[in-house]
Image (tube, rainbow, N blue to C red; front, side, top):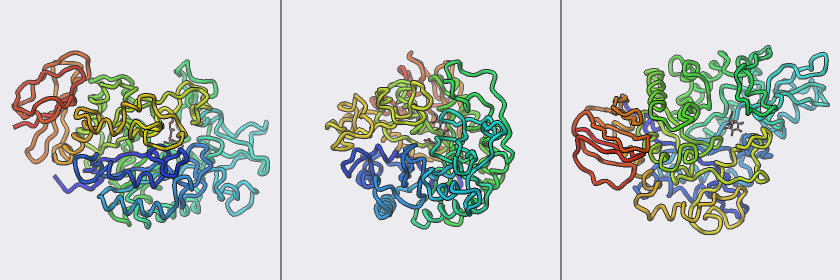
Length: 536
Ligand code: TEU
């Protein structure tokens, strides 16, 4: 096995800073809170999770119309979260523990309160007039094309001063930057440099495939087959996305970004992308010269129900599609998706944890999933997420952004005042303190899996090969490196299933955490049980 980079060998843990740990007593989490919880993430011993990197969702100055994904200053820290000195301390403290810091980079759009946009909208001939996407109305005064905003309604907003429309792929307060303007590109590259100079180890790049649109912005065709429950204003979700994203010329920008990252050595570029496999794979770059890790959301988007055959298809397809110079990655949850424990079920979430942490490729964990936190109970009047509000749908992303559950005190040890979103109702029993003491808890399952993975060359670096079993509800595979072989068998179903590894082996871990280690050539998996077997 060739030498692996930290972002290949390691595991990433996503923190939504608003919801991790409040130390300032305002009900919103902050960077000092992350510092104080670093030992939980990795103190070098198996009492901690043992993650290798954290990805922080945005902590920049922002009017918070999209909870920080509307940035009004890319090179600072919102006072809610601390200041640059706190950030520097976080880097220092994290690095001391061997934890890398990946930050969120939001290149597609700024806030409408960003000074660049304030200037751009002030006239048609100011120096930043062309920094955003401005277009004249059609002769009848309507928007320049039929494109919709991801968050509902048209993607165009009329501006009285310029007497033009500006383009916003997300909320009205998130105008899209014009990346075809070299000045914009240069300014946004300077943002990368600013943080790299401060010592960050990489970036998670928000909707990176959207930054370049077709220059003519033609109308997009309407889909014929759409979900009948889609709200009326979901224009974006009724169209084929031919011109508004995934344009071939975005790859040139990504190559330049990669070259910039490479100037700083051992860094990682992770991109948020949603495309078909053949389109997605292009984001590694033809020579491996674009993203290190184009996020792979297929275990979310293509696994609507907990199904072993479908999971196997996804993994086989991804593993086969990644070019030899590329490295796979898998995600089960993030700040935009319903919680994994609610999508698949509490027991299934344990099997899912073993799946995520035994596949070939970098896993990204989402804070709280290691406790099995379910979707929050958000009443309609408690919704704050603009997607949830504007789309008028039952679902809101607030459900997966509830505060981290540390203990059974009134606000779960997250804060001493009422948090910005309610803690999930089960927090008195489902929390770090309780699960720490319970040998068979989800938290201890995550810890065991993470530390086992760390010491296992087949798991962190080996090949992947699916193994047929007689049971449609069992997904089994081999992982192999340097002659060491590991067999993983996951029972996705609610019935007992007997499986045989290809040869005798030593059972080292069960998702139930109640089996004695021992040599076996056959294992009876209980419902939803997964096992790891080291083959002799
Ligand atoms: O998300 C992009 C995106 O398209 C998702 O928001 C998704 O379509 C939506 O949540 C419905 O599931 C990124 C960020 O992850 C998200 O939090 C931001 O709101 C968005 O970009 C705009 O910056």
